Length: 68
Image (tube, rainbow, N blue to C red; front, side, top):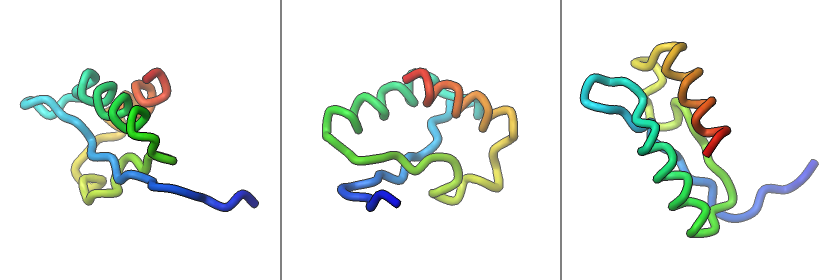
């Protein structure tokens, strides 16, 4: 098993005012994390928002995160 090294950031789930996914926000955060040499991203529910987001939001978020 590989040992984790470095900083793994607790990524918030970017939302627009209508609570839809903020795709640009996802991309901006990922770009920022990459530019700052973070070792990993912990996404979806790591900041307590997991009980308030829908399965559809989670699917859209992971799709966007994979494409960022």
